[in-house]
Length: 400
Image (tube, rainbow, N blue to C red; front, side):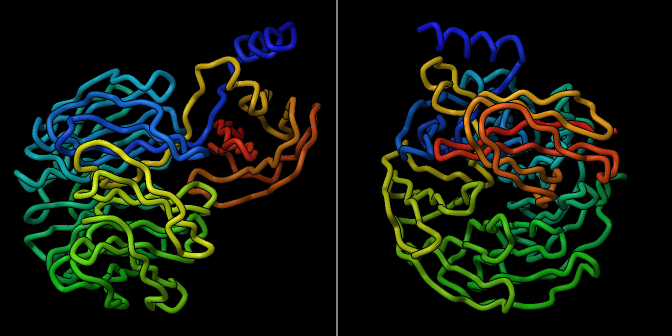
């Protein structure tokens, strides 16, 4: 008991955040979000949101989840610390896709009903710009450096490329028929677009904004995601109840995995070991082991799960007993210039990454304090990830 009180006090005094991987899946006809503990593959909470929730995007630090309510023309802001809606933002007509910039400062929302993208400042939760794009915009993704936003226009058979500095459309790219989901590679060099009208994936070179390859896949592709290391792309095929696996080195289809009925959105776990697939007509979530490409679990969720976008987060524990299962970590100073002091109460793997997810250094630490050199890093914002079997703890730090 004394030990537990000590750790809880340490968390409070140091302002430490304790996290475990959590998935937030929108249930379109249930007007709610299922919260899934990724470690146990169980639904741990259900959060009421707006009418017909569809799109979802998790902030890079895992503290917030943004939900697009297709039937309410709004976006709900969920705090992962409490699993409650903390704000509601009015956007355009029938919001579909959502994506947040890597630095967490801007949220982009595609509005299918009025052919626009709403740009939201996440500090104030206000719409700061509205951009006209192509006809019936659906999926949306942003480059890791935040410079460009890619929007799939379903009825236009195109992708609009937005200059994020000016909030204007810089160019339009012709892709396959009826593009739906869009995802950017971790290094920002490539965009992948799922074309539901002709059963292909278009591969876009972001340096030239041209289509460099077209990959045939399954029937009626919709959602699309990419592994953390960029080696594989996963696409849901709605009309054949499957997920296509693409090798990005060769741009070829290497496997097809049978999942639940009418799969829609999907997301990869942060460690790349699992893919979670929302089965729209089965009211289930299929969990795929990425090593064997087999379904290893099926989770019952809400009514017509969609999960269109990135729905896997890191979530703060609110239970003191649960907090003791993962390491308590302090880092200081923050900002730091030459060395970052890391203090930990359990053995863990520590990773320093860029905001875009590029690994800079990794180390295995036991309990205690260590000092790591960061003098070689350019000035900016970075992530410190603490990884254990129970989950992943993430904190931002500033190099000055």
